[in-house]
Amino acid sequence: MAYLGSAQFGVPTLEALRSHGHTIVCVVTQPDRPAGRGRATAPTPVGAWAAQRLPGVPLLKPDDINAPPHTAAVRALAGPGLADAWVVIAFGQKLSEPLLSGVTAINLHASLLPRWRGAAPIHAAVLAGDARTGNTVITLAQRMDAGLVLASDAVPIAPTATTEDLYGTLSQRGPGLVLGVLGRLGEALAAGRAQDESLVTRARKLWRADAWFDPAGDADSARRRINALSPWPGVSATLAGAELKLLRADALPDPPGRPAHRPGSLVDPAGGLFACGSGLLRILEAQPAGSKPMSWGALINGRAIPEGSALVPIAGPPPEARGASPPGAPSR
Image 1: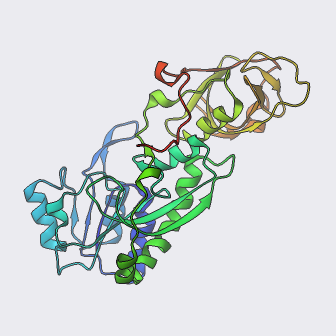
Image 2 (image 1 turned 45 degrees about the horizontal axis):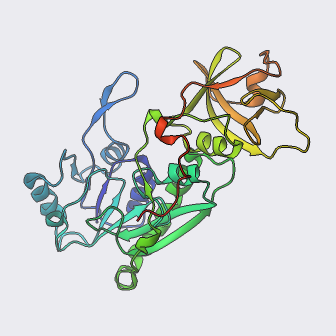
Image 3 (image 1 turned 90 degrees about the vertical axis):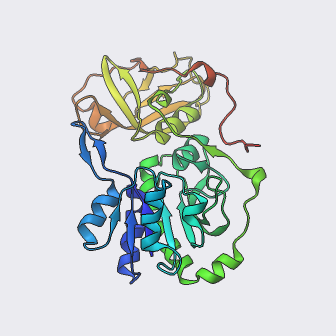
C-alpha cells in the first residue's frame, strides 16, 4: 500500500491502514513549509504523523511529484507489482498519467460526488445550504475528482453545523469507507459507476476576501456563510466597539408583527438575536479579539452590550457577489 496525502483530514485513514494490517511501502506528502504565527518550517500533518508512527517507511516530500526524478522515486517504491493499491487523500498535487500508469489508485473526497468537486467541498456544502454531505471513494482520473464512484457515505448537515464540525466527522468516517473498498477492491472496481456530469458543481478554493456577510440580506444566508467559513477564514464583525470573529450561528424567521429594525441591530441581548433584512440571526459562538472562542452567553457575561447595538461586518461582499445567484447550481 502506498499512501499519498498531506492534510489532517486523511490522518485517521492512514492510521487505520496501519492498524488493520496493510503494509505501507511508502508515504508521499507535500514538502515542509512555513506555518503558524512564527512562520517556522513545519511538516504536513501526514508527514509529521508518518515520521513518528511509521519509522523505517520511506517518507517522500516532492515539490512536484510529476517531475521525472520524483515520479521515478515513487514508482521505484510503489510501482506496479510493488504495492497493491495507492490511497490518495488531500495530497495537493495532481497525479500525472505517467505516474499512475499500471497502478490501482483510489481517492477519498469529502463530498457526495458529483456535487462539489474541487478544493473546498465541505465549505461549499455548508455555504450552499445543502441538507447533507459525505465522503466518496473514487478512482483517480485526469480531470479533478471525476473518477468512477466506488462507495459513498452520507451525513446530514445540521443548521448550526460548521465546516470544522463536518471536517472532523467526515475525517473519522473516512477510514471505514476506504477499508471497505480495499477489502473488496476487485469487485468495487468492476462495479464502479460513472458520475453524472450534468450534476457536477465546483467547490473553489477560499480566500480571506470570502469572509463577509450582509446583514441587509436574509438571515439564513448570513448563517450559512458564518458556519461555512468557521474557523477559517472566519467572518469578522464589530459589536459595541469590539472586534469579534463569528464562529457559529443559527437563523430564525421573523416573528409575526416584528417591528422594523435596522439590519444588524441587536434585538435580544440575552439570546444573541440580530435583525437582518429578513429573519433573525442568532450568534451562538464568537471569539473576541485576543481571546478564546466562547458561547454567546459567556460573551455577554460582564459585558455591557445594549439592545440596538450594531453588528457591523468588517468586510463587505465583493461587487461580483452582489446580486449573484445562490451557489450550488450544476456547472455545465
